[in-house]
Image 1: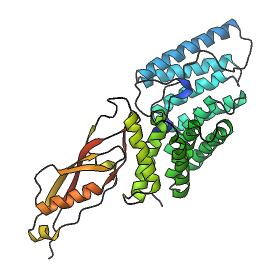
Image 2 (image 1 turned 135 degrees about the vertical axis):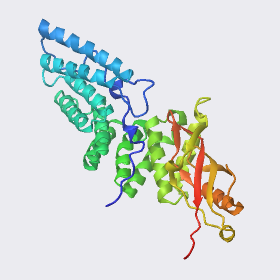
Image 3 (image 1 turned 90 degrees about the vertical axis):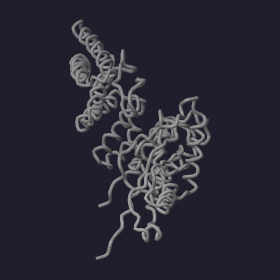
Image 4 (image 1 turned 30 degrees about the horizontal axis):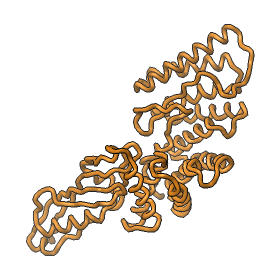
Length: 365
């Protein structure tokens, strides 16, 4: 059985839902919708009691969003669930305000890592949007994005693929081939292809994304596209043994341009600490014969500076090495390593850290 890639950066799908971006949330978090009125709600006559219920539902939704923004998810959830119950009791079954409320509950379940319930509520939300006549709107696209993420987290890649393909189909009907919105839509099937280890399709989709974003000013490239390209660049390095192809060269050039276009202070060098776990290609140094002859063994720690594309641009031995030849071998290996690009607020940045190499003599009996 093939080992699937990690879900690192798959949170690219978790963007601000329903037009309500919440500054200050950690990457991958998304706030519930805060709606005051439906955009195309089904028109029904309501009684005074129903009107009071809808006002209470709106107040509860607003409070749930405030609690969410404060990180109080456990307190926000019952309010969102109560708002949903009130709307379901006061509105027609195909009123999109019910879909909004369902999506709110789903968003909270998702951030609480309750993927099964999140999926259930997102699918119910999608069904109500569709029943209201909305099959291709932004709210539908947003729910489909969440469903890609939830399905991927559950390792149900068939369902993830189905949602991703629907996103792409809708985008192809509504956007021109070279619009950034098309590149954003392509991210979803591209990420699913990466997780499926479908190298050929992933390369084709990512090449299309790069074709589009190269035509735009680097500062305008959406963060989710940068995140996805960073994910894929790491995979390419791993596949190609740290060497470069035309596609890796294009992506690295784009990353450098995005970093250069960032506002002053954005591209600050990040102190990464021990970054072995982020390595996608880490060749092991050879054990020099001179060190073996001297019976030298031990640990060599190398401090490195990794650029915006994951390449090591500086390396030096941090501590005294057990032997000069071990130090030189470690430096040579460290300079050939490749890392997943480090992003800060969606901007590629340089990062410093350490890699360690352990040399142990094997004594024959």
